[in-house]
Length: 209
Image (cartoon, one colour):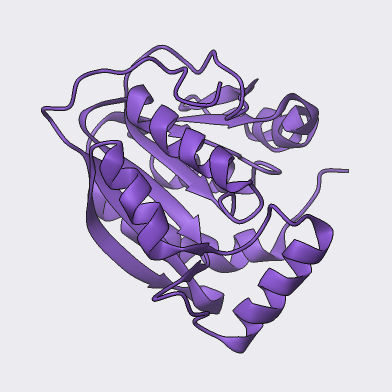
C-alpha cells in the first residue's frame, strides 16, 4: 500500500498558490527529494502546463513510483534516481527546481551541493523553490521548531533547521537572487530565488564531489 503524508496534505495548497503565480506558462520543473510522491502528483495535476520531474535517492523510488504510476499523468515523468552527493543530474535545462523538507535532513555540505547543482540545472532566469523550516537571526521562529530541531539532531548531529541567512548566502554565491520569502503552515517558509541571467554555466559536479 502506498505511503501517505499528512504534512504533504496540509501544506500542498499554500505551496501551490505560490507555484501558480510563478509557473503560469509551459515549463519544466525538477523536484529534488520527492519523498513519497504526493506533492509531485498533486502539483502536476493542478498545473497541466508544467512538466514535473520527480526524483529521489534510489532506495526511495519504489514509494515515489507507487503514486506516479497510479495516476499516469502525461506531464508527470517517471521518477528518476538523484542524490545531491552524486554527479549525473539531468542534463537538460529546467525552468524551475523545487524541493520540500530536504534542507533540514541533509548535512550542511549536502545543502550547499543541492543549491550549486540546482543552479547548474536551471536555465538563465530559472527559479529555485525551497520549502521547510528556517531560523532567522540565529533564532527559532517557534517552540515547536526548537523541539523539532532537537529531535533531528538526536537522530543525526548533521541534521537540523538551517539559518535563513546562511542558506541565502549560499544561494547568492551560486548567483541566485532571493525574490520571495513566503509564510507557510506549521512555521515553515517557501523561499524563491531567481538564477541570475548573466551567470556562467557550471559543471554539475560542484564542490565536495
